[in-house]
Amino acid sequence: MKLFDVAIAGLGGRGYHTYAKYQHLRSERMRIVAVADIDDEKLKLCGDEFSVPANRRYKSAEDMLKEPKLADVMIIATQDFQHKAHALAALDKGYDLLLEKPVAMNPKDCADIEKAAVKAKKTVVVCHVLRYTEFFRKIKEIIDSGDIGKVAVIRATENVGYWHQAHSFVRGNWRSDLTETPMIVQKCCHDFDAISWLMGSPCVSVSSYGSLLYFNEKNAPAGSAKRCVDCSVKDCPYNAYKIYFDNNEIGYDAAGNRGWPCDILAENPTREKLEKAIESGPYGKCVFHCDNNVVDNQVAEMNFENGAVATLTMTGFTSKNFREYKIFGTKGEIIADQGKNTVTVTRFGHEPYEYDINKIAVDLSGHGGGDNRMLDEMFAALENGGETASSVKTSVRTHLMAFAAEKSRLGGGKQIFIDDIYSENNGGKR
Image 1 (spheres, rainbow, N blue to C red):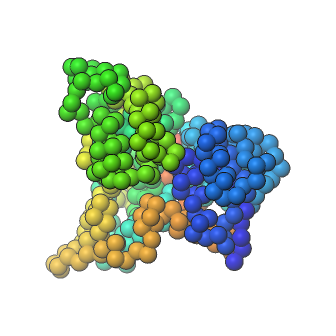
Image 2: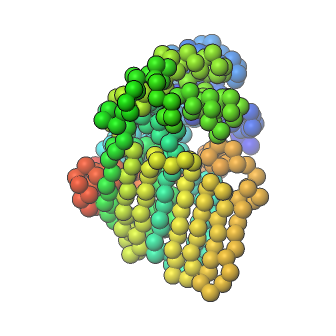
Image 3: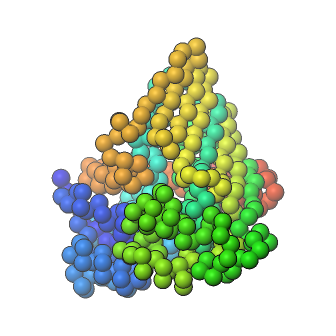
């Protein structure tokens, strides 16, 4: 088994707390030899944890990319708007890449990265982790078995969760499409990819509607302040103290949580650190007085080449954060509930039967085990040849579905054809 040297650009929730941690599980497979981040604390913590030499700890991805090739693989987990420049520079240096989704800010930049990978003859694996989870692979296995006949309709719901909406898309890094990709791309390129994969047929066109319905100043309750620390509204569910301390799923106190999203506010969070972050940082701002502009609800409709259709509903107005998929086939149906982690199959005229993924899966950490399996399969492909489930070639096509949804939304729900977007940005038909 080959040991791969890895450099990581971006030490946030994904670069440090997800991908770097893989070395603890597979030290015979991955060795971190260089890291880069603009945050000195993260740079020191990650560098110390993985014994990265001081001269291989860089203040930015750009500084790291000025050096000669340092590793076999570079993990790019920087912000969306940085992906293109970092990916192109890394490919030019001769790295194989693990590239965090979304691939880039627009269809043209995505296409440019795909072309550069082909030219450099390097592997680019995009972090579409749903394809690697036991949950979605079980759904795909059932569809491919023919048990429910031919798929006619897929109905997917992305329950973002009220606190996740507030954390990431109102107060957080992905609150504005002026600096990051639109929410339907950033959050749901996963879903477009999964839907296309499950359907087993190319998407022809997309239509979409959505808006920023609620998180704006006109909906601010009487007595609200610019920051939660100063607010007199007692029953607001979006109050930062309620989310980061009292929430039963992710609260520092109520759930004993020391990981995401508390560690986004502060590395190795303590009560004192979190209180300071809420008092002075972006995560303590009132959700009705932020500089966000991305949607909090959106629906997309998709037509596929095989005649089937799909819908995707994304909403921040849910109590829980999970995905629900219902697949309607000509001989049966599948109800897949990622909250319960169950997949229920009903063949027409027969009793339903259920797969409990909690009992089937060996690893349910990190996106239901998808993070670690993605890295397992990437390193296996790099060693033995072949493509992974989420190559850049596959991923760019499904990214176009998400970009088409946003283009349609901005155009009042106009039908957008995928071949048209591909042709405009890649110089030819799909």
